[in-house]
Length: 264
Image (cartoon, rainbow, N blue to C red; front, side, top):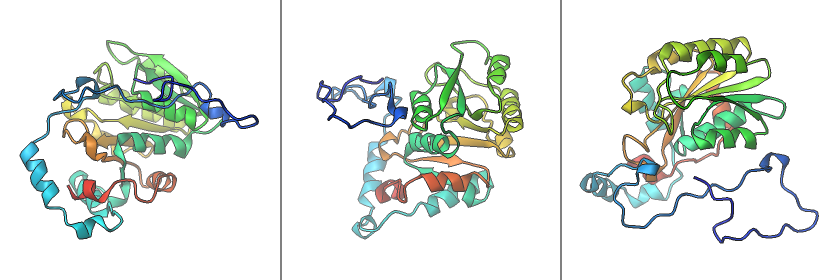
């Protein structure tokens, strides 16, 4: 899903004496797959077909007065929080799920600490861990039941983050609620945060959100890009414990989502 060279196809020479931060070593820019401009559905990107009429009507209803002002995600955060019966402060609207993941990583990962991932998994998690200066510890999970025992063994006092994706991207494997709780308990004993990426949870048989809401070291990631077919709006959100949500706001930009996206 990435291209090892810039879009131009060439790698520019670095001026003498200029060097990037060590955390960029081995990483290259993320480059989306090429598009032919004709395909209705891009399955590799999980883009659903939009309701064209409804979208056109919604776009036409946006006032220019709204667009000239800086965006405010408070109303959407209140609405999402109400649906979950939690305080609005626990919901942090982000620029897609990617932004939420990056914020979680930058909040707790640093040089000398590690993050435990299962592989394969969503590519941006490992990248965000490395860009935060952390070490990636991987547990293979290509099929079958989630390897809970092996995963728990990787978590220790040097672990800053345990990252889980369910249903998993790209395999579709689901992690049982009991396993998620077991990871959270092990992580809590080691002083680590748990991030559960639920980008595809609308396609799962069960949603672990109610159980995870009660845990004080679990952040959940949600998005409107997948099941709702709104990838172009770039609206995601994190559901975080009260003590952790301020960290996510601190490391993020002041206006991560555009006014037009919020208005829709």
